[in-house]
Amino acid sequence: MLRLVLYQPDIPQNTGTMLRMAACLGLAVEIVEPAGFDVSDRHLRRAGLDYLDHVAITRHRSFSAFEAWRAEAGLRLVLATTAGARPHTDFAFRPDDCVMVGRESAGVPDAVHAAADARVVVPIRAGLRSLNVAVAAAMIAGEALRQTGGFEPDRAPSA
Image (cartoon, rainbow, N blue to C red; front, side, top):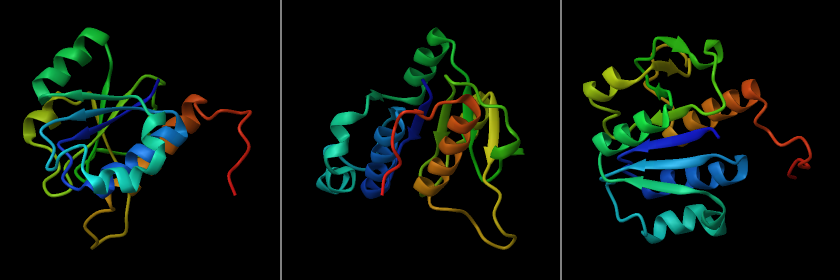
C-alpha cells in the first residue's frame, strides 16, 4: 500500500486535508513527530471531518524511529521537495513507496534528503516558490496511484 509520510507537520489544517485525501484514496499515513501542534487539535479534526476514522495513521516519535521501521519493512522513501532531481511524472513509483512531504515552514533537513532513495519535484512556473504541501501531496499521490494501478476501479466518481 502506498504511504504518505508527513514530516513534522506544522499546520493542522493542511494535515487534516492530507489525511482526508489519504482516506479517500486509500493511502496509509505515517506522521513523523514532533508535529508543530497537538495531533488531536480541533483544526485537524475540522479539516479531516469524519474521514479520519477511515485512514490508517501511524505516528513515529522521530525520524530515526521512522527510519528503523522503514528499514525493517524494506520500503523505499521518495521525498517530495522543491530541490527534487526529477519531475514526479517522470519517476517510476512502486505500490509500496513511502512518499514524504516536509514541514510547511522548513521542508526537511539535509539528513532526511540524504536518507531518501529518490527525490521528486512537482514542476511549477519559474519565479514561484512552491505549492501548498497538501496540493503537492495530492498531485504526487495521484500520479503514483495512476502508475501503480492503485485507484479502485469499481468506485463511482464523486460528484
